[in-house]
Image (cartoon, rainbow, N blue to C red; front, side):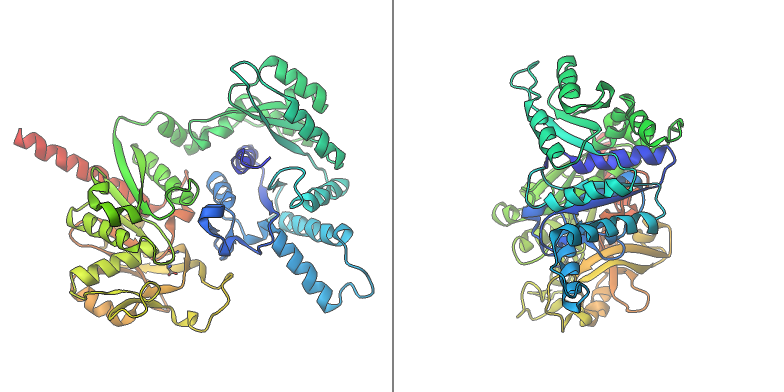
Amino acid sequence: MSGLGKGILAASIARILKTHGYKVAPIKFDGYLNVDCGTMNPFRHGEVFVLDDGGEVDMDFGTYERFLNTSITSKSSITGGKIFRLLLDKERKGEYLGRDVQMVPHLTSEIKERVKDVGEESKADIVLVEVGGTVGDIENGYFIEAMRQLSLDEDTLFIQLTYVPSLSPGEQKTKPTQHANRLIRSLGVKPEIVMCREQEPLSKEAREKIALFCDVPQENVFDDPMVPTVYALPQMLEKQDFYNSIAKRFHLRKTKVPVGIWNRMVKRIIRPSKRKLRVGIVGKYTAVKDAYVSVKEAIVHASAANNVFSEVVFVESTEIEKQGTKLLSNLDAIIVPGGFGKRGIEGKIAAIRHARKNKIPFLGLCLGLQMMVIEYARDVCGLEGANSGEIDKATPYQVIALLPEQMRIEEKGGTMRLGSYPCEVKPDSRAFACYKKKLIHERHRHRWEVNPQYVEQLEGAGLVISGKSPNKGIVEMVEWQESFGIGTQAHPELKSRLEDPAPLFVGVIKAALERRKEKKKKLEKKE
Ligand code: GLN
């Protein structure tokens, strides 16, 4: 069933297998007919996640990468749109000449091939497939059928994720699980493990009933409990001896899990030091929980690395336009994330000015960098009305211009500057102090860039250009001299992992801590 945290559960299972020494290739099926997520609005579908190879995929891939600490390729994302497109292209080429093309076997075979390909190419020991949606949906029916067929060729284990509601405390209902189980079995798929999401730990009776009606041993019924942080889920499952159930079935090695950096970081998240920061994300989808997941997670990682707890405060940029920057009071750091279109832009610019004037540590991501440049152009270079061509075509100073290669592009899907690109970092810059490297690679998703015609003027006025793409000279990073403020054309949040936090996020949190310390010192002096 969707909406139960299937992505986090799948990623946790992958993580558990990894810590026991197995290579896992995650795959996700999404039933919608979009070829990828690139054309979807975050309001409807949450954040669009971008992979190294430029694939614009479901945000669950962010969870996989964060949990596995590896980069995944877009082949792992199998959508209805992708599969249908492949099939129809083949049909037009005449590859099925003389035959009628059918859901079974043609579409399902295509899916099976993709799954086998991912497993073979990545040399994985185990392929872990997450089927999006709810059993019984039209959207994922053909994926479930493909998996049933696959189980005839391969050693396959099915896991059912189900919801066990409580009508009142202590009164857990297992009927929905029983019916869902019956439904999936009628499709020829028999789950051997049942994972239960619930509001309270699974009672003995509920466990017994589920085991009986779903035809699994009781030790294969697991609690998928509420967790203080998603990163704690692998440990919670390990406590229930989850690995053992899979190991038995697949004849895997019994190994001891080393207590690595992961566990230390989880401890820091669950029991943070007393130090507390308030970090503001100024965006326009702040009402949608999932629109800025990667940014939020990158803050979690960077805070754990600095051994501090950061409360994330979402500030709606259109509200700043109405109510002013008082909405930003008491923030220790401000982040302006990526975005598209005109709405809320002036609020973001106001937030950046507020950060610069008050020396509040600032990080601008993609659109955040572009707005940082506009703010600087208007206030420091005196270019009144400076703007991005995306927002105001008639601006007298188009300091953010369309990338030359974007000029002839009309199709919207998959045509931005996408994926991993290199950047040369300026020595002695704030960015260099964060990355400690001259050449870095981050992921991108944009059409616009800092207009090369204004670079000299911006630099002359004091804006530091701290990163450029090696061959094209695209401005990749800018920063303020007077206080910590870095803008990046990339999305470093997409590569932030609990075990390897994004350097710019670690930097902004560190700067926020230092500013706190200094403020405290000043106060003490006064007293
Ligand atoms: N809209 C801007 C562009 O296309 C920024 C994109 C983003 O923030 N990802 O360049």
